Structure formats: structure tokens, C-alpha cells
Length: 195
Image (cartoon, rainbow, N blue to C red):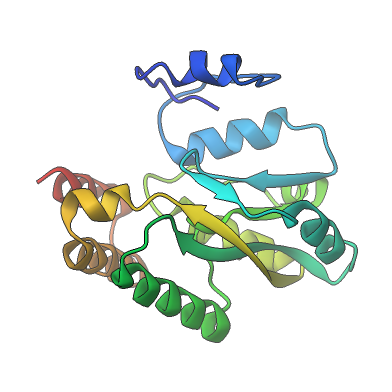
């Protein structure tokens, strides 16, 4: 799915054998929604472009969704960096997932396609579309947290600093939970990311 990129990624995807390259309006929520609408398989996996899954992910996902009580799930977050700071972040994410059952989009979210569409699909929102998607998946049944790793690029953290990025993420998340206007939160978040 391409939301208007100008970095040559669609050409690279074609060179690497992508069977289909969809284009839509910019914005992750719009891309997720368009991808879900274009999908035809029984199961869907939402994976960020800078994330790759550990070997065995597909069998594990199919086993999880073989249980009708499971609505969908996510994988274990791992940062593609040897720096110790990322092991601390991974531990924090693992704790959040264990206590709150709340994975984020960079962990690779999955569900059964038809029930997800029937439940309303992906809500278009300017930020935190992944939290909406997790809530929708949870409405379909239990959330499976699989042990296979979703290796994610640390480039945002490297560009803006690990501590600053964590603080920025948590401030935006607090605004979300407090019910602040998402458009304003998204504008602030994007401004902070480039500031």
C-alpha cells in the first residue's frame, strides 16, 4: 500500500516481486482501510513497511486464529538495533501487552478479514488508528500475543533521540486517553517529530 510516497518504494516493491501495489490517500488509517478493502483472503495482517516478522510467524498466526475464541492479535516487538536502550523499550512494551493486552501497530496486527469488515473495518483517524484497530479486534474475541518477533526499525528513535521519542509518544497517548481532539494531537505529534 502506498500513500503517495516519493522515495521510489513502489518501484522497489515491484522489483522485489510485489504481486499488487495499491495507492491511496496519505495517512496510515486510510492505507490500512484501503488494504483491508482490497484483501480477499480469510486472514489479514497489517504490517508497517519498516517491520519484518520472524520465521514461523505464519504458522503461529494460523494456529492462533484456528481458535474461534481468538479475535486477532499481534507479535512481540523487537527493535532492529543492538543498543541496550531498545531492550528496555522492548521490556516495557512486553509489560504493557501482558498487563493491558494493548499492542500497537508496529507489532503487526492481524485478524480474520470478514468479521473485521463486518465490525466496521479500520476507522479513519489522524493518529492512533492502531489503538482503534486493536479495540475493534478485541470486540471480535480474545487477543493473541504471539512470541514471534516483529523486528522494527529504530530510525524514529535514532533521529529524534530515544528518551525524547518515548516522552513524545507518551504525551500524545495521554492526550488520546483524555479525549483530546485527535487532529490537534496529530498536528502536535508531527510537529514534534520534525522539530
